[in-house]
Image 1: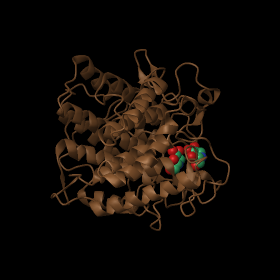
Image 2: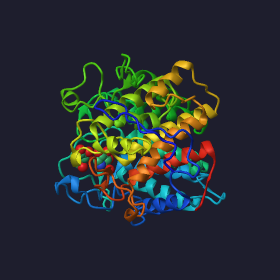
Image 3: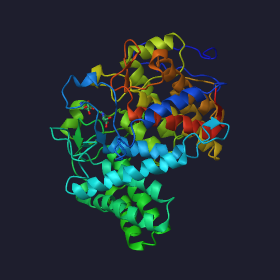
Image 4: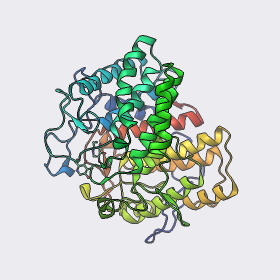
Length: 462
Ligand code: NOJ
Ligand code: NOJ
């Protein structure tokens, strides 16, 4: 499987990405492995039939025993992203033959329960429901202890997951969900909320203009504008959300791109970020990659994506001994983590962020398939990013690049893990670590494989 890869230089500050020169003959995760991951994922959803989503079922040693009940909480963010991906899997051709991968009745019931659960929060905890990140999965009350608050990505993520669901429902159900969606979008359409100092998605750093938060707000408001127009015949709401996206949020990339030769998207503002942003130095941050993958803001095959990938490769190759060792051994791909100065659990690669990189590369393949050709300069930027002189910008080359990343991820899932995914991969020994069965890890891995299948077709269930 690894024969067509070539190890490259692994010195300090070098790009250690190891490309495969062709897509894998058999997909990076077999049909059987996909089904195992899906089963583990499903166990975290719809807790006791009440609709909550557990962030993870397993132990969380990186918390050092600090926090009540570990990850046995419903995070607004993790849950909404899980619901988003679950709905995409319904008509997925991820596994052949064309038997659906996920039963559509299961998905409808699960998202229905999720919607009722979030309605309980919106009604019962209206004052804090937009900004509290973490909820008791049985009582729907906010986490009672100290935490990084407020967090402003929740309303946008929740509204998006619910719009996706509502779009396929009959008119009376649409109307009742629209009330919930508007509860979040109306909140988002206020500049005081858009510009609120918020914790970042890693729940550590505060700033009024994190890229991830801005990107999600923008996407939610824009989708709200479309939804109001196409389904609700509500021109007033439609223009209100459009106006808020365009003028109150504005272009999330402004003040979020380092514009020298090594251009990349930054999580903290380039100019005038908070002291907290400066302290953690979250310029180069996996959050931006997640924002690219989860919105349409940046074209995945663009120069900016290529340069961002290059900067990340250099950063995370340098930060993680396991990347250097794998590259020297010819293991394709690269592993990414949250940010370079991360210390949570020792500061390791993360499964979900690595999968998001693969997703970005598969999405780039999809955009080429849909007709967007790369310019010679863009091809050059990708050759540089992927340490691959022969890269041509073809659909297959992007799939090969995504497969490289998924191969390295797969390489670190030990047979005894039984395709249970954790949160992190130890940066020294390469073993999975912390928060076994992290819902969000499954969501990003399945999402990346789903996009791959959209580009190259389904994979046999072996
Ligand atoms: C510190 C971690 O860095 C952060 O991401 C996490 O959310 C909190 N501790 C609590 O889990
Ligand atoms: C810690 C992560 O930093 C945060 O983004 C996530 O929401 C929680 N864990 C729960 O998975």
